[in-house]
Length: 162
Image (cartoon, rainbow, N blue to C red; front, side, top):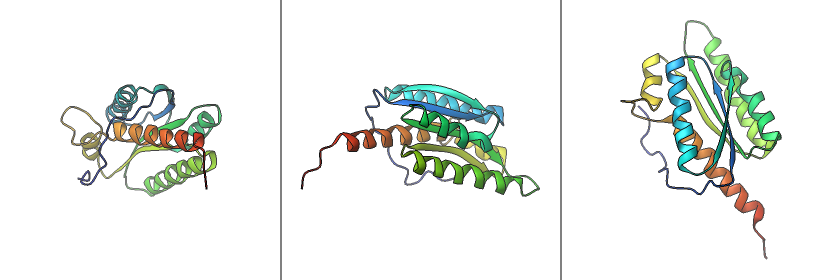
């Protein structure tokens, strides 16, 4: 299990930050845990969230991009992809990861990456922030997006002197 070396989720002042939580709907229990964790973290940091459900992880990039282009300061992409017996896992994992990276670069706005790529369902349960889970990847993704949005807001408002 990963988690060693993870950044502390110290309090960040997320007030004024508008977050789009783009949430894939596959694997109900794990997806619900990720979403609940992200929502708790957004509230804890004082940001404002809107949940945008999408069918699955493949659809995350286009909805995240549209949300960011329409006034959101950050996006949190949540999805669950479980390896099966076909190459589908690799295609969807790559499309979601590459697409979300491109969204962040193209928009200049942060995308918290809460897409779980798993070998089995138990790995997702361990990471979904559910009772007994070892990690809360939804909360981690929300924290990363909001903390980065705050840094970008501060940078854009800073006066540079030589």
